[in-house]
Image (tube, rainbow, N blue to C red; front, side, top):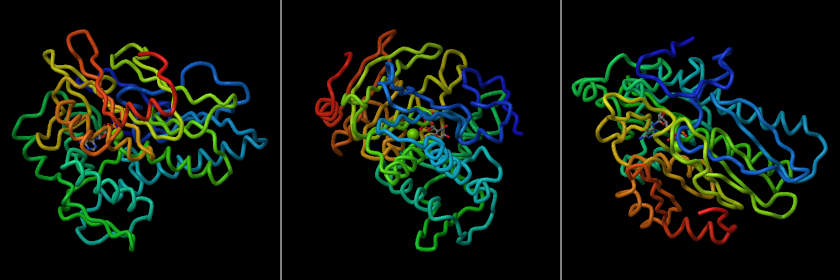
Length: 364
Ligand code: ADP
Ligand code: MG
């Protein structure tokens, strides 16, 4: 079991089942950022399936009537377990950890699902000018946010520069006709933590569709996907959490149908040194945790996997750059910025339009 103690590692959530660290894994700290949760009481006859995965929890609500709950529960758990066993950097024997541990620069055969997720991640890296970069893992570790636990002191500029040399998404290639992956540096390592929960949500959605369901809300560690309505025909109600450590309050409520929803933020997984906040989102251009006033970004996209990756990328950019980037590409995004003790919300027209058309805003 890997050590999880460190002076520079406060304020983190523990694994859903800390007694069994092997069960935990992908993100032992659960969702960073705003945890999005369904608000209010479930409508009658909505069935809820819950459990632990990827070091966090999942909740699946299904509004379509059905009899065999245990088969549905098994189907959901099987999908999420498969994602975790392939994509986790917190399990030493996951498929991804084995690729990371290999020093080979030859093509290495991998499963189609791992290859395709990495291919998508690389496309998003290219599309976001490298703000999203799954090769930041050595930097995540250097700053004390990795599976080996926190660090005793902040890394030096020289350490950051040296470790940054090992990163860069252009050093990773995919050939999913193989399917195979290749690193051009033997010490390159891949971290899917910013995209795997959204991917897991989509995998569960596909499974539920195959089982004939059309009205559901799937949530894994704060990333979601909704389709259809609750039993009473009302849209699903989603609460966006106020980006503040130590409290759980709703910043804004949304009613949504047929969308993926993901949030990245700096207030769940961070530490402070001399009044400065260091959070787990790394700016690949500096090699250090992001430094700006944007506390969280929420993205709506058809697939949760895209929403998850884009929320991370836009948090790296921050509201100033991220808003114009998102607007130019029609991305539906909401940025929450800290201004003193106030939280200042700004959203793109695409975000406003989706919220307007899929439900009414519950609370400003
Ligand atoms: P959360 O998992 O808390 O919802 P994110 O989806 O933003 O938040 O994922 C954050 C995780 O992604 C970090 O803990 C780290 O492992 C990884 N990461 C950090 N910076 C980046 C980046 N620029 N691009 C891709 N992944 C990143
Ligand atoms: Mg993300």
